[in-house]
Image 1 (cartoon, rainbow, N blue to C red):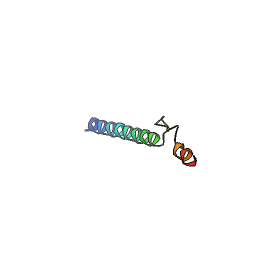
Image 2: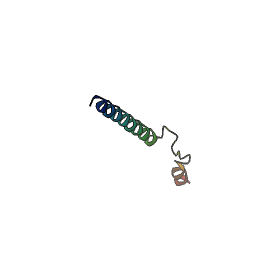
Image 3: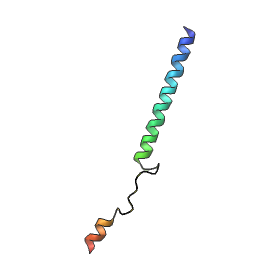
Image 4: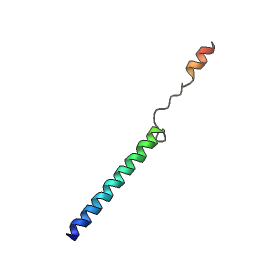
Length: 51
């Protein structure tokens, strides 16, 4: 019974750590902190509107 509790605690801790890591990585990617797609020509529509 004692060994079973230790396995459950370790499994829950590892699962929680993986979940938090994926959550943080997802937030970083959403904010393009991990080198997401950067559009260099973001303002090109405005410059053509002036012409």
